[in-house]
Image 1 (cartoon, one colour):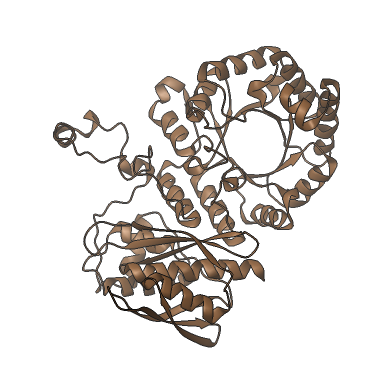
Image 2 (cartoon, one colour; image 1 turned 45 degrees about the vertical axis):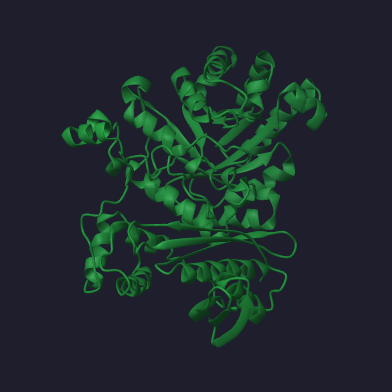
Length: 505
């Protein structure tokens, strides 16, 4: 009988700590619901004690999903555990995830605690968490650099105090696959009561071995893996969910394991996260990159045409990459669009469908044929702005060499229509200056700007991504979509400004 590997997704906690990957509340909820569709077993929704907004987001996600366990991270202190329980207590399946460092370097320089104090703290705080919640996970931070015998005693204390999951993190991405596998084997042999728990691993990618380390641990007996969509996370990131899942799925003969993941939701989850954070998926990214199923070599092309399995170990449809078999145009109606969306696996409310259909008709006026990738882009950009947000109504840009670059922008904010003209060093600079001036946002700074083609061809849809730095240093990501790159850039800027104003309210 195959082992069932639990997928613990920490995109919304560890992943969001990655620079430039912060999300607002509505984006976190949308991502959590997609993770639920994906079929993850556990969603680590955040670190409740970190801030009032973190607490609110964990609490809201706990109420929004029902099929997954919802966890909140907590240090081994009563205040952290109280906050974590308050945030997850309304979840259908709540979990408190406590952690404490166990390596000598962390205990001496960070915790300033002795081994005896650490052992006592683990016993006391796991038992305290257990008083609130049956499902308690204990993580020994920097486990891979800890003394194995001491680490085993730490986990033994955690099990005795009521922990149901023991997490073994390679916190700084230092370990190798063989070392991680050996550590799991050692713990299985030396931790009292470990057979009553799930053994989890949490690997970072500093040396590029997070996925390899995780898979080695599965072979050694781990039953839960902690990972993130697209591998986002602090420093070089975390183990990539899509790579772990598809490795298990494709090589089930080798790993003798399976997950509960709906693999056809993998690409959708990856693209949604990329759209929310504004961080593009590298073309060569395994499983979900644009080149993952592309073949340029003539030898490869000949083989694939003859038999796809000559060079493809997975089918693109297995991970949910949309196929452009049904092409829509400007004469297509709402029913045809809904049917296409259903075939792609999207379930939209009537209100969401109306919003996507309106933008679909607008796009159809600019493109002869609309493909599945175009439609997917429209769906990913369907998020509704908050009440009082700005909406681009029209723009006129005058640009050229040797002439002033000017931009006229017209926005609607609530019932008010705002308009402004500005001169800049280029068409986008002029447009952004006009928006800042009409909204009184002189302190806003453009931190970065990028433009990506969402689809192919001369009438490709372009996605613009901006990162705006507000007064105080907070950074907000805005995205915009259009066949006109200037329009998509302006829409991205307005989207970023809306997030900034929503956070300030």
